[in-house]
Amino acid sequence: MIAPTTSCTDDAVVAEVLISAPRAAVWAALTEARLLGSWWGSSDTYRADKWTLDVRPGGKWESQGTSIDGSTFSVGGEFVERNTAQANQPSVRREESNA
Image (cartoon, rainbow, N blue to C red; front, top):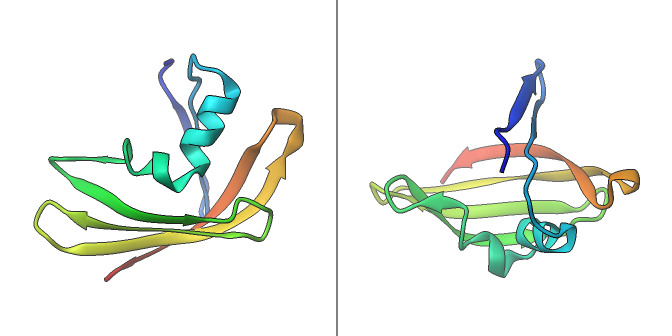
């Protein structure tokens, strides 16, 4: 994996990461709830315990998890667009709350 690049504006954070893996495997890892939980977070910070995703433009996504101190959180948003020129590269809107 090459180091990620990031940029920020007042209402967006954009991160780009190049991963040496088949595109289909990366897409599955980012969009299938059963795969997301296995790599998102870490045992010394938090774990994302539940994911729901609808990756179509306008579709909602949500993750619920538990921090190391036992507190719970919820983060979610909306898939804004899907860049078919980049083969399933979604743009997302994020919303966050502490449960």
